[in-house]
Length: 221
Ligand code: MG
Picture (cartoon, rainbow, N blue to C red):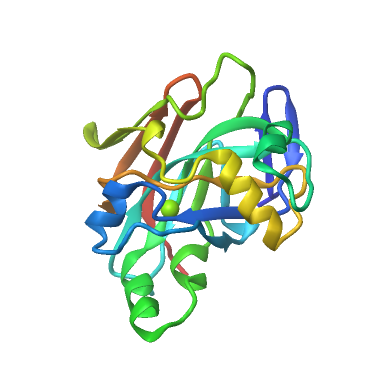
């Protein structure tokens, strides 16, 4: 899989996928975990990308895979130690993103104090829609975000519910690592994360940004 994403009429190489844990208070609550006092970041490998949607493959290693619907920010420029005030200059576009998660592997990692690499990193675990070019008409903190699984609404929220807003996320992450053009920043999921099984059809929609559709199948080896 080429690690690329389309934004408007451009196709951009994706150097990394940076995700945020528990960035909606209602999701932290459903996970039984506190709302963080500062952003918690983790990475997904770019080999997990599924540009434009497609088929999510369930690995044999997990008995419980869940879908998290998220607003993704696609960077048009990089930087380090970027202030929140300058962060908007880095935002190139927005897309609909699924942070697919092997929840049982994540729970085990939590208990053992291990990393989330396996839980978050399988191939096809990062579907992303075509991106829209950022412009003043899109307020990324005022968008409805909705997921349907087999036609039934499972997540229904608004990006206004984010704990840490996008400029803060860019500021905080750019203190840790250099941000690059094409980086995808997934901004966290609202409540309603849902277990997926082979045969499911996932449809997500973020107002003014777009839609993302995926099928689910078991991975055969
Ligand atoms: Mg997530």
